[in-house]
Length: 130
Image 1 (cartoon, one colour):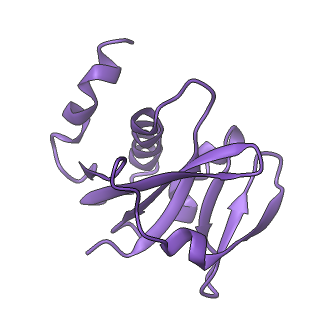
Image 2 (image 1 turned 180 degrees about the vertical axis):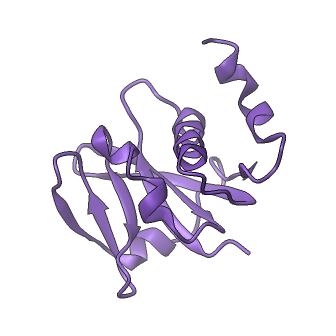
Image 3 (image 1 turned 60 degrees about the vertical axis):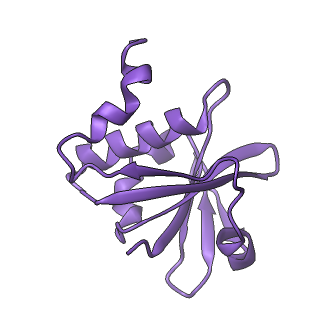
């Protein structure tokens, strides 16, 4: 069951698919495995674009430690709301309405999580370019 909502900042020239791949690599590096992830849409906070998703991994704080060095993340704050963590340690609040709104049908996509042995095969088009 997908229960945790979060968002990862897209870097310039990056696609939502590439952003999710980067998140999954970071989760594997922290040894945090999950079964699935569902991309919901892309939204903006100021001039930053974020890929919003939900997953069955509830320890997103630990899974995003490495990513936060160069990109922003939106995570649950433990009090029923959400916080945005930006590079440099800046933080702010994000409305629950933004994080729980109806997904955009054009971007909705399911991914197998890293607990599945074949999780990297869904990123073959990215891996072929490296």
